[in-house]
Image (cartoon, rainbow, N blue to C red):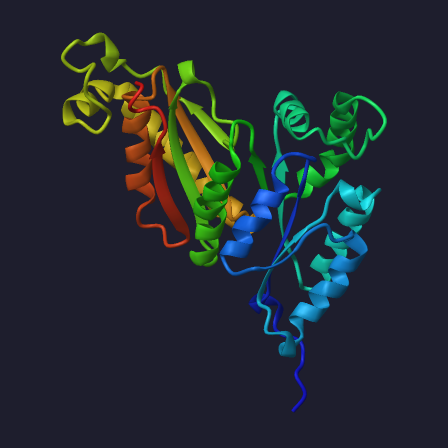
Length: 297
């Protein structure tokens, strides 16, 4: 019997795109290390043909990652059209969009002495801004937007492994990262939702509580004293119970909920642990808690 097309659900196709200099080469290397069949710098018009080839039973390729970017020329509108066609053909790829701040991109181009593909004979800054404007519709279409500002190549690979590839292993679950942080250290760039809990009582002003963390019972009791925390959790849990199924229904695979207090050591951790406990029994959620600034507090 001749090999026929593989079921669409059996094919895991990832399209990596984004700003020039944002780290697409490192990203596709992470997917390659994870066993994906990888193709770099593929023109959009060929993605559909390659996808059909992968779907054929004889190819034995079930996981593929493709980089498509401005090195291929004027591709922005063509890539959007290709993604829509693939979705209509039941081969809907996961689009990973990499971005970084303008200053970070400038520094990277200076380090490599490369010319920007949209400003080969002009200023790199002009090319970055032109590309940012042209790519906005594609960014809005992306399933995952990852900010690589401040990340080395090795850090980006680890982030893809822990955030994206771990979500793939979890199946259809929503990979939810609850990230605690201190506002004095800066708001996380990759947060999808940011929650400010600085309205809760601050244990920092109690000398006996200051060296502790939000995992210590005395800190929890102090931060949650009174009716304010009770009312807050009731409203917050109602919101999360509404939002998370909606994100899952929309097909979102990864969500980062950032919770901030002043230093990231006390109140944010208390709230993060309460949220984690509330969501612990949800089968459609793969949950992890990351305390970014707890040591610096």
